[in-house]
Image 1: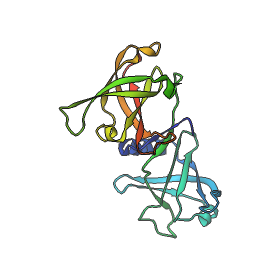
Image 2: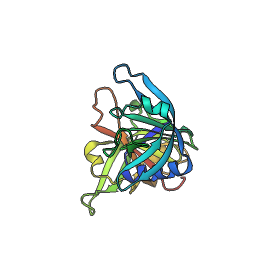
Image 3: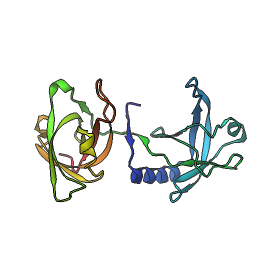
Length: 222
């Protein structure tokens, strides 16, 4: 899923789930056989209700698909618009034989990125970097000033690599100042951006939780 980004922001996930289910109530659903990895079934389901307070939602399957459903396995969901996919488990409130299937609101989701501007990837050998300045979420008066490697960039945003320790001091949705963007045509050297998302940065020789790719959206086209 190269064109998808992962969101782990609870606030963003709940907001998107509410919006998606409000406008599109039919989607694909499937499970995988844990032994083979093959799909044990795939079909269509209908959204029925959402309970944000309890952290769950319910769907309706036809009787044929419900017979194949295994409540102990993770269940995959894909909205018909093909821009929103996630997997989750049955809710602790689920009871076998219930008319509706009850699931947990997912902890992370994949969202298809519909880009207006092409994205340029910067290989490590180019050694492209920018200076990022942002407030420490633990110590609000302290400003963190870091030199960060650029993973990719476009006219609308940039993705930089940060350490796990740095990520723990960052607040998603907050503003960050970037300097050193002059290497990319059509961008000014300095601008403000909003921290939109973070996902593990995987590279040979690094574990998935050592570094993170931080997605930033420029506050204005520059």
